[in-house]
Length: 257
Image (cartoon, rainbow, N blue to C red; front, top):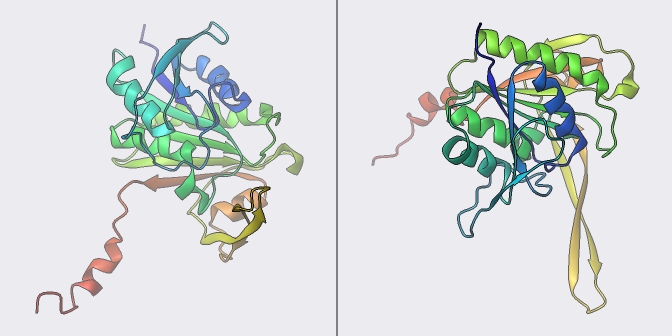
């Protein structure tokens, strides 16, 4: 009888987040689960790690079905501590999420959910970040389960290329019945940012970041197109940020004169 895979589960919304609890329930059908997640929300932390203060881990019992650890640090910290201090063997896969909100297109840069997955990828562990296009804390994640199970099993079966992790986004249930899964590229889109400037009672100015999302990409092979048309988007991403296509051009510059 083959050994069940060891699955590391993490997120950026915190260890009590409903999205995480849903992801844990799906992973129980696939393998043995260990949870290491932030003890409080860490959304939009990107790939931040803790170097100027101490880190703390507390073993917790939320539903009693698996070992769980609440970490005082960032999502990337959670993966580092899991691999180096908590687990007695390397996980066969790391899954991060289910994030409450989109991590498609440019959002992947800021995402703590995806940074946890990328940190696992740096460690040589196959990894997936899952996100639902619904920011509601009490969002309905039920329709996500089958897609998450399918994608996770396929990664366990086939593996991933060295340095590659998957960014998976799932449309909101309000869009109706989903049409399937599409492997996509990241859309060229960004946030048109604004700051809402206010003044507190002490006379000190403060700011709230606001803005609108702008998709400048009309391609039908992008994650934004897939999500808008009722598909689950799967984008392979990598932590090697080298713009390989630019090296030849830059080498024509007078850099050594």
